[in-house]
Image 1: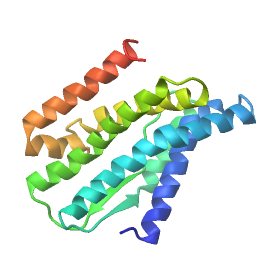
Image 2 (image 1 turned 30 degrees about the vertical axis):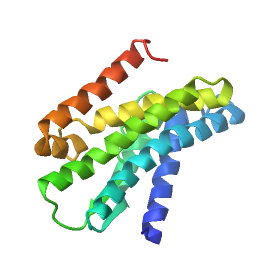
Image 3 (image 1 turned 90 degrees about the horizontal axis):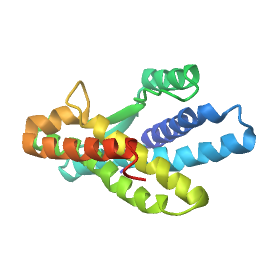
Length: 194
């Protein structure tokens, strides 16, 4: 189900994303940096991993060969944007699941939808964790916010993002999930959630 190359590339992307999201803490001392690196690996990394695995597993359910492939340029851009802004802004596109066959619009729409839906589910799990105190609560807050952002961003109908294929397949589903993800994210930013 997973090739050695795919596992290695997922691991590299996961570790680099964890580093990128914690780079702002690099000068706050080793203990604090390590804490935020671990929080990022769990909160951010799980959202990324589950998003990509959802695409892969749904594509395989339809009988397609699908594997995650690292995008080196995307990793460099992510790392550079994190370092240059000390973690305040990050553009991350470390790779994607590639399907090695032509897919019909309905199948492609459902495969594309699976990633953002997995992020919304993960946001719900992290929301419950955010109600705890200490490190588990911190992981919950980070995971909740990042997973909402991943869902909302990936549902935009531009370029290779998931929203384009979802909208082409079913506009009503696309509008509903886009509204839910951006609505929840907006309420979080305004302080109504968490």
